[in-house]
Length: 360
Image (cartoon, rainbow, N blue to C red; front, side):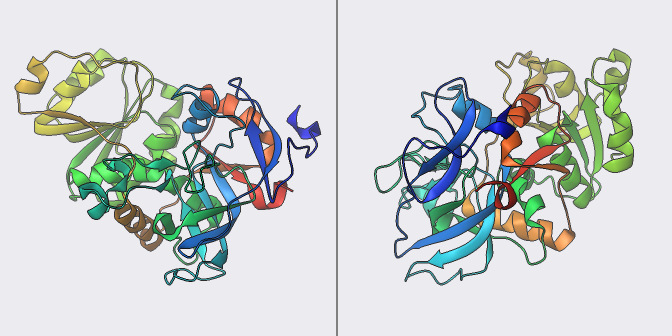
């Protein structure tokens, strides 16, 4: 249906985009004005934008009330077209990325430690946040974006832009807790719950770090890909009680990427003494027996995306080790179908929109 939509607009402007007009989340062509480039800003032509579940949540008011029209997309990559007079790190022609936030207070302890995602005064989201000019921020389902230099990242030389987009949200979401909890120790054991967009990236990092990786999935259908494509060491169907019980006290770490509700006690039992389970998915609730935390000094914690320093480190690591996500590249005209497929978990493993060749 979306293939037949024309590039119509609510108003005139310098930026082409696709936007939601209401909480149905349905996207259609839209034109608006981006702010002018300031002295500390970078303007980039967007070539690709990853599709994240956040795009569903923002457009359909699952996070919070939205201001429409709303342009989703916070896994943005492109090419620098203009820089402000005070920008030294980037130049025209550079390949750069923009992630989940585009501003922060730059004054609190977390910002000073380059952990801006935890800014005491709140970050400004790339989607539906309040920009410096008083307008609402609009994401990467658009032709270009203007961002403060602090929140732009260099894409490693030679790294394909179509593969770089998911690094700006999905990949940093799993990389951050892995580094924080020292899951980069070769020879240690990692469990990954869920083998979707986040899960397959956790597997790739785990293998790059030299870990023994076990995947837990509700679907036997993913076993062949997990073993052959992703190279996991062990595949477990989480509903198989005998398999689960046989793994008790065997893993150092677990990253839980599942967003559906699921039991936690079986996974806590699989952790070794002093083991850590990090939640990066979004189940509606967490239920577990407190004794499974007390017995064995185990830790259950959560994590969001990362700060600017760690995001750049992650990008550089992926470039140096040639770690690439598995993606399905689509035109912007397929965005609505892609979001519906994402809701149904019908994607292997991330959608990436080819903005450059389909918008305009």
